[in-house]
Structure formats: C-alpha cells, structure tokens
Amino acid sequence: MEESIDYQESSTMPSAQEPETIPIENREIVSSNPITELNSSFTTLKSVIPNFPSLDKSPQHYIDRYNNEPKYHSWFDSQFPFYSIDDVVGYKLTSVDGFPSLDKSPQHYIDRYNNEPKYHSWFDSKFPDISIYNILGYKDPISVPEWIRNNAGWWATGEITDSTFATGIEFILENDIIVISDVPSGNVLGDEIPVWIRNNALWWSQNLISEDEFVNSEISYSRRNYCN
Image (cartoon, rainbow, N blue to C red; front, side, top):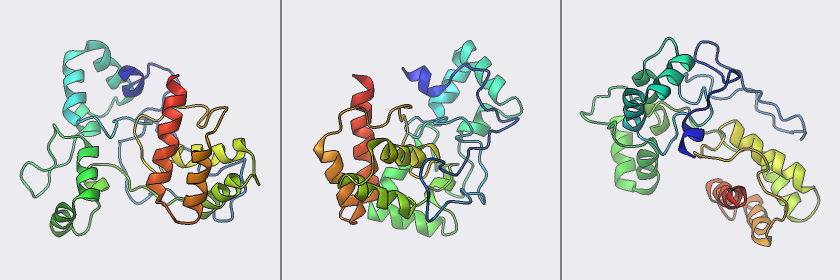
C-alpha cells in the first residue's frame, strides 16, 4: 500500500523534466468565482507527482528508500533526472539551526503551527515573510471557492445530485486547494452517503464548521469506503 502512494511505475507519470499542467477549471460545474491561478508565485518540485512527497512522511524516509532500495532509486531517477533526492524531498537550510529537521514530516510542523499558539508565534517571529508551507517546500493551500461551499448547501438539501457534489470535492483535492495526504482516487463519496455527511455539508455551507473539519470528514468517510 505504501509504495502505491510513494511512487508509481508508469510511463504516463509527470516528471520533473516536463511537469504536467493540471487543469484548473471544473468542466462539470459552472463556477461563479473561477480559479484562474494556483500558487503561481511559489515554485516547487514537491507534488509534481501527486502526493509525492507525502505530507506525513519525513524527508529521511525517502532518502533512506533511495539509498537502500535499487528499484526505488531507479524510479526516482527516471522521474527527476535533473535533481537529487534531497532537492525534491528535502528542506532548504534556514537561519535556525536544525529547523526543519529531516527526520520530521511536514505534517508534524504544520500541525504544531496550527495547534500550538506559542509555536505559531515563534515561527512567525523567525520567518515573517514566508509561510509554514513554503518553508517546508510546499505551495500554500488555496481557499475553497465560494461555489463549492454553495454546492455543499444545495446538496445537503437535495437541490443538486450526489455526483455533482462529489465532482466539487474531487476538484478541491486534485488541485491541492486543501492539502491532505494519502487521498484515494476515484469515487470520493461512494454509493450510500450517511446523513451525517449531509449534515456536515450543510453546517460548512453555513460557516458552522471549518473547511478543514468538513473536508477531513469527507476524506475519513471516503477512506473507509475505499478500503472496504
């Protein structure tokens, strides 16, 4: 299961030599507030291949695999022929000695920043002009478009179909509008949708729960549905 997330041996995979441009328009839902640009000001080698490197894996995890697994070594070199493993999965040096540490995952730092006010203040004081995501080598997540929030409310009250709503959720995941690692592909919601999913959609559309709480509830459900 881990290898299917970490890398895929496929001739259709985008590579660092010719990175694939991800379409930003949603062709099945008409948006009143379309996204025309996705983090174009920050360039990165991370996520050229979706979910690689994963937010919940440390750079050292990938470096060890590269050094110890010939098959993995060959795969990486085929996808990033002009870059080292450190260039793609590592962290850039900062003015703070030992930060970020190669044996800590990006998610470790993101969680600390979001959940520990003291840590949040320390980071902002040390790096006032760069986000926690950028310091770890990732683009900043983009706010969910208002049309997707509207769709959530309409879906919860039965005004639009399941498939139309699912397309919007897939859109925000595929375009890294909210960055969540290890997201299954394919049918996001499944065939039978529990009432609590609809309730969450309604509450999110009314700003009663956060974007992260809503999307994480969708992903938690889709993972269970995907694995069964």
